[in-house]
Image (cartoon, rainbow, N blue to C red; front, side, top):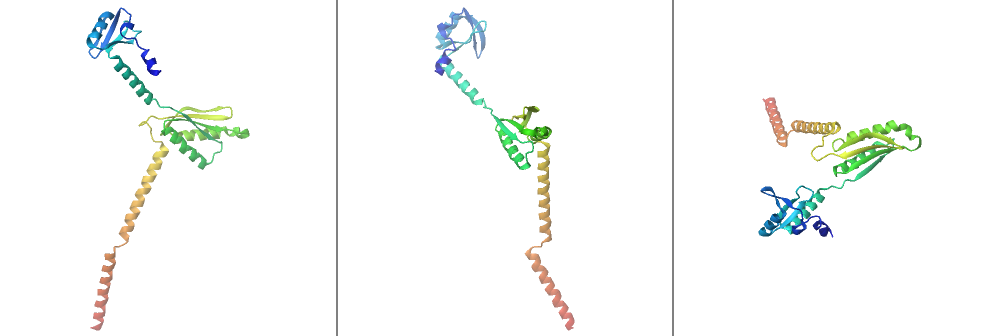
Amino acid sequence: MKNDKLKNQYRINEQIRVREVRIVGDEGSSVMSTRDALNQARDMGVDLVEISPNANPPVCRLIDYSKFLYQQKKRQKEMKAKQVKVEVKEIRFGPQTDEHDYQFKLKHAREFLEEGNKVRAYVFFRGRSILFKEQGEVLLLRFANDLEEVGKVEGMPSLEGKKMFLYLAPKKAGSAKKSQQARDREAAQAEAKEQAKQQKEAEEQQVPANGGLFANAKISAEALQKLQDTDKE
């Protein structure tokens, strides 16, 4: 069915009934009568294929029609493969979400954005909790800041009924910038690692090797023997 639909998109050979056409190819383009174009196609053993009927004059190619359809199907398949299905994932908060729950949802939101999906985060205000809408806005802004390296904000938090929404879209690969929080965390980890390394080196310098212990014991024994010999004299 799809192949038939693709075939019906193009007119070929005697189906082209205009007076003249523009022939395009690797060597450029030229305008000629449709009769001459058909004769040229026959001489070459190919088809006259109309690829742009709305142009003036219509644009055609001299090509094997089966090969032309194959190229078109291949191109459509490649374009379809490049189309990424973007889903919108929801993250729900309460106005007084605790830190553990916040970090759990932050982790999932990061995964969604890294997979190329959008994130719709919202704070749901139940009953009198609507009085804490400023607190909900601060939470969403913190959420956006913590996801700065993988997502971009599509709009500031907005209150719709009992829900305050924030929309995040994934950043393109290679364009994500680390947030200040992430940079500070990495710097702290690097500093802690360096301090641990220096402490280990200091401890190794303070504790002598076994050879050193035996050497010290030998020296002490020799000194004691000399002292005893002196007393005898």
